[in-house]
Amino acid sequence: MTAGPAWSLADIPDQAGRTIVVTGTTVGGLGHHTALELARRGARVVLAGRTGSRLADTAKAIRAEVPNAELEHLTVDLSDLGSVRRAAAEAGSVGPIHVLVNNAGVMGTPYHRTDEHLELQMATNHFGPFLLTGLLMPQLIASTAARVVTVSSTMHKIARSAPLDDPLRQQGRYSRWPVYGRSKLANLLFTYELDRRARRSSVPVKALAAHPGFAGTHLAANGQYGRARGGRATILDAAVKAVSQSAAAGAWPTLMAATADLPGATFCGPGGLGEMSGTPRIVTSTRLSYDEAAQRRLWEISEQVTGVRYP
Image 1 (tube, rainbow, N blue to C red):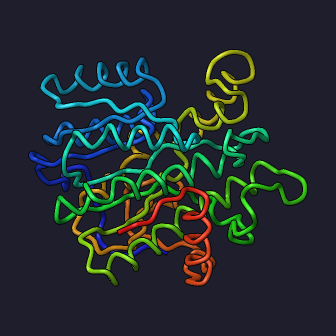
Image 2: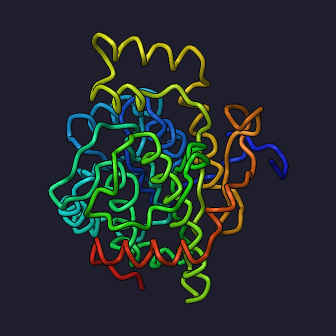
């Protein structure tokens, strides 16, 4: 189901004077194209990613199109809660933050536990962003009109239950795709709960979500093989791109959520058949994502795991 008029890049207002943090900005991915369009319209963009070299590559790619782009770098591995804490402390120097785009993620990875004993997909896609958002909340509040945009996926629809089990223990046999779907459901549960809590506390922050449809990124190959090039990874990467919309188009719903005049708890996605591609619109998520009891319980679990408490 879709609603509302179509949106296009031409609808992005001037972003001069605004500071926007975008996570997961590898060249060619959704975060890169999100950062590019925001920089093109004058935003000061903080590129956040795991390695300095990749951040430099992204900055170079953006400046090839926007020579005067105002860019900063923030090194953070969202699967590592210690790295998230260090990055948030470093980000204190950028001052008020107007938009945080929680874009970084992994997909369909083999079973792995982080140093904090968290399953990798849930750590990267949910717990890391939950901690980062909480630690940056004072800077978001300082902007007086901020928003947090978290990138989910249509794969949240395959989740049969919310991820409310003990995150430090594996429940049954690991299956990468159901776990991925639950991590993307977690993005929506987090978004809706954050927005409700902010409104209840009169905090000047809105939370919105977006999904890219079926976009031609390296995410699938990276998840399956840990790389986007070489052998089967190259074949899978090429197959995905052959049947999907571009990563640039996949970034449109995120850009809509980050810049359009929308209420909190809005979900943006492609307006085409099956929400796989097309011009972005307001879309709806599954009934399970709107379960307020599940939202509250996941929030409690996330606070316990990360140790962060939101204002």
